[in-house]
Amino acid sequence: MAEVIRMPRMSDTMEEGNIIGWLKAEGETVEAGETLAEVETDKATMELDSYFDGVLLHIAVKEGPVPIDGIIAVIGKAGEDWQAAVKAADGGAASNDSTPAEPTAEPAPAMASPETATVAPSADENRMKASPLARNMAKEANVDLAKLAGSGDSGRIVKRDIEAAIAQQGTAPAPSAAPAPTPATASPATPAAPKKEAPVVMPFAYGGGSGDNFEDVPLSQMRKVIARRLGESKFSAPHFYLTIEMNMAKAIALRTRINEIAPTKISFNDLVIKAAAAALRLHPAINSSWMGDFIRINKDINIGVAVAVAEGLLVPVVRYADIKTLSQINAEVKALAGKAKERKLQPDEMTGNTFTISNLGMFGIEEFTAIINPPDACILAVGGIIEKPIVKNGAIEVGNMMKVTLSSDHRVVDGASAAQFLLTFKEIMEDPIRLMV
Image 1: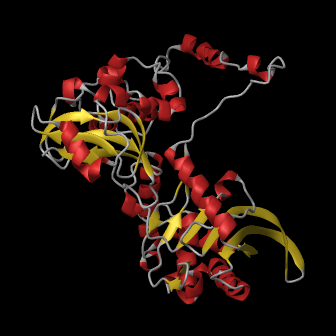
Image 2: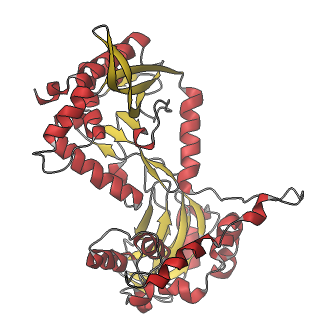
Image 3: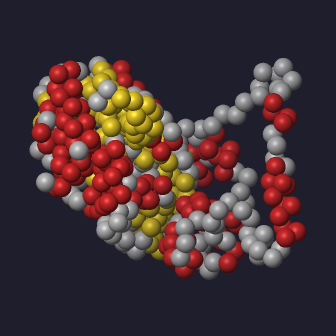
């Protein structure tokens, strides 16, 4: 009998997947390992590969959200009765499997009408020319789709084509300037810059009293999960917060010295990760998780590093951070952050965290509190290094001070335990040579 394809669970927090485009059409031959569709999860846009050889007999949902295990397609032999296969699957329990392709293709947009509203304007030929993921990647990397030959079906441009083009460019996405002014000699192109101000949105400054001067933005899968998980964390875990300030003079000096010889430039965030890992080793209660009817004290120290992306926040994980060098941490964080921003993180790169760090210091934030990232018991919010007057040995001098705030789950961590962890962290940051011992 034909094989029924269901929406797989692509991440530990995924409850539904949003189909954004099919790379195969009904009636096309499919081989095991070939990409069928692109699916947006709560954490990334991922490719859905086939596990079977055969013909794509039926696409149940062309676009839109599908719950985990919902039927999305049927693969079998040419001419095989896909409807019988759908009815046989789970006794016909799935809600999107009882009607032919034509009717099922219509409700999908209805389930996500805001999203289809944004997709509808693009012409069918554009959709066939490049997959949605490829278009997004091309836009970010300033790759001209018109100059590419697609390697997908019917010349369709897919992810691998964009990756090859980016590799050929040899550079990261170009600045936001349009391609036309590239020649430096074209001085007349400079006045074109003010034209960038053409989209001055003055008409929106006043709605004319109609009460409808707003824009509704549909929730992405990522934003839905952020809202659910952090809401659960904030309102189910009793948070308490402790803030401590430290003098970063020795950390600044050590970083300068290390960067004279290190293969990569070490950041202050790398020092924070390493110092937090060292402190966690001495205070295992902070490296714990609330498991409902018991507390789990984690033996491994896996630190989640919050990374801001266009649609929200991703938390890739640096595993065994306490036994890695600063250079290793730096390289790993850079690689993971890059993959996060391109929505290419794999599920195993975003799971297993035992403690999380959120650093907003690079944005000039001096101090803030963060919501605990489940299943962790604590999260460390790191502010920027601020030059300010301090008193030292009875005299006023300029100090480079940094504040951190530890958010803790009071079901797992007591105030004294959290305070002792912060004191150890401060001692390490104020005398970071300890990290080398």
